[in-house]
Image (cartoon, rainbow, N blue to C red):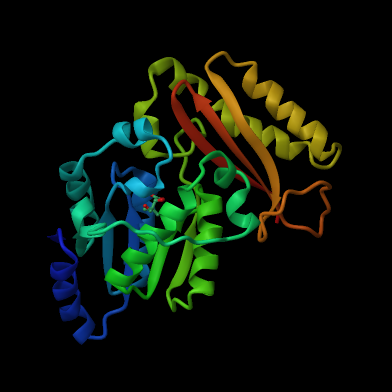
Length: 281
Ligand code: PAF
């Protein structure tokens, strides 16, 4: 497994594979890899000739400086894990490589980018889009893999690929969960024991909320989620929103013919956790 720190060395390594017409799968990450990331890598390895994984904690997508500073980083361990999977190339650039000058590009995804994460993390999706386009342009993969835990991010990347005519196939992969249901996230490592113990309530509440869809309405379900999460002293609900699965428009009435997904963001102390569940497929 080759580790490239610059776009130039990455492209030199990739040109060897490209000359053999290899199909290139790409998994962008911010490192601190867990089983969720590794499932994306496995998915890519099984469908492509080679797999490139990027590891880069992108400053422009953090609207909170402390969150950026505290974000877990462990390149050595990440590379060790990736080597075991059979990953071919790791791209681990530094800030100068990815942002040699200010990136002033502004992306507008309309209301898809302004609800939920877009509302509570201003500038987040602009930063994600800046780095993802830079990564796509550097790697030029045939397929790129994203986890469905970041449900809104996945929708925005799909829209980005469509709006900017990237010919990359965007693949969304299932959420991987801990044994107690907590969605895997690099941020879970930051949870103190009492918060870690409380955190599975997030997914349990989503499951109970989903059970309510046949005998309840959006307002009652939302009130139930608010009460359940906030009654735990270690959790604080930031938002719970049921949206149209494809447009991300907030849903006011649940109808069997309209695909809907429920999304949630919760603070467990200072650690922000997100999750989602498909309500109507
Ligand atoms: O999902 C992530 O880990 C990040 O947002 C991504 C896509 C790697 C961009 O920095």
